[in-house]
Amino acid sequence: MIEILYKEWTVKAREAENAAHQILSVYGDSHSRVISLNDLIKRLSNLPVDISSYFKESIICLEHELKRASVVMSWAGFFQVFSENVYSKYEADIRKQRIKWIFKDLTELKENYPEAQLIDIAKDVKAINKSEIKIYHGQLAFRNQCAHPTFFQPSLNNAIGFVDNMISQTEKYL
Picture 1 (cartoon, helix red, strand yellow):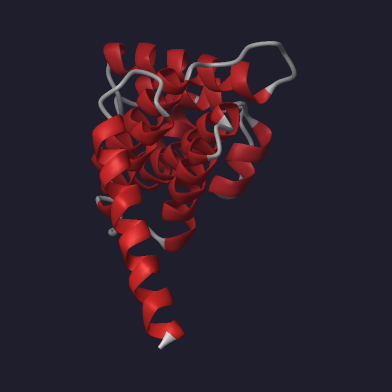
Picture 2 (spheres, one colour):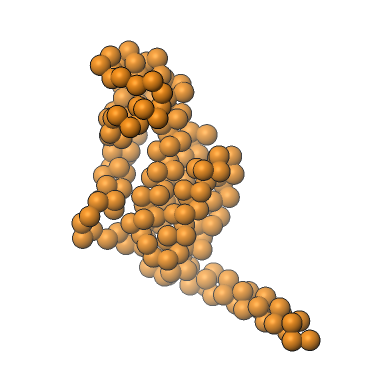
């Protein structure tokens, strides 16, 4: 009998928590806004497990108010898909554009050259346009602020927006 009551109370408590998150999610920096990101993760079902795990970790970080970590993880997920896409479609063009670059595969390319240079080459080979390069460089700069030791601390709204953008941009390269 106690087990049945416990299960019923647990279900009711979860329902109450979900209802509270729904109500609170519309308010500014409310911790409950994070709940809405769970819907975004569903859009990533086409991604390999390792990529979707970046975004899942990012959302968990947001839920625990680890905003800088959420930014870094979501950028990592996006950049993995972006770089794989550009490399698979434009490898020959990259080699023509950057004759002095030496790499045998994508892993070595990413190890030897900074992300900013990989974004630049993506524009040079026409994988992205001028506005996209500006966006990606801006997002990389924001990610770098979060990844390196500084006093910078993004707001919850900024971190949620960044994760949302990274998920949307990742979808473009599926």
